Length: 238
Image (cartoon, rainbow, N blue to C red; front, side, top):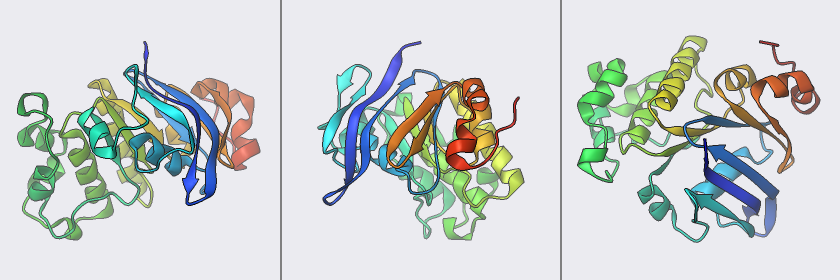
């Protein structure tokens, strides 16, 4: 496999303060890659910088061999990079169907049709005329994922997709993430559920204080003890 997305030496933050310090990572095409770490270490800032929501102080972002550091968020979206923000980013007063109609499609022939989304998320089909604000947390997350994949992104950035969800819904979201990857969407995942992350990801980066402190396959991360050192928990040796 080849690298489809890279961040090289990214230093970035808010205002004059840097949150990220010389962060470098790469994402292989057709893979699930994760960033693991405690709250506030820079995981979300990394995704926002890759998506163009934050301008880096230094460093570069490359997509499919092209330097996209100076591209706007809209231009990156047009390159078929998608993102599901923490907090889901849906329109609460719109119905499920209306929410799914909002994403601007790159081309009708290349995009997921509404019926295909409903096949993928059957619960949403039953709720298509309901306002998004009346959905459960899990249903809202499915809607956010449906909105994100409708334009058929080549790369999808997922920020805490299981946060605040019941265990059964977490399993459903996990299944969806794996199915999206099987269908050819490359995923960069930020997730605090370490065991779920290690189970679905082929490669992982561990972040602490705005820096990448370790990286490796899920097996390498489990065996290294880095999770216990930096997060204070143990990862099951599967």
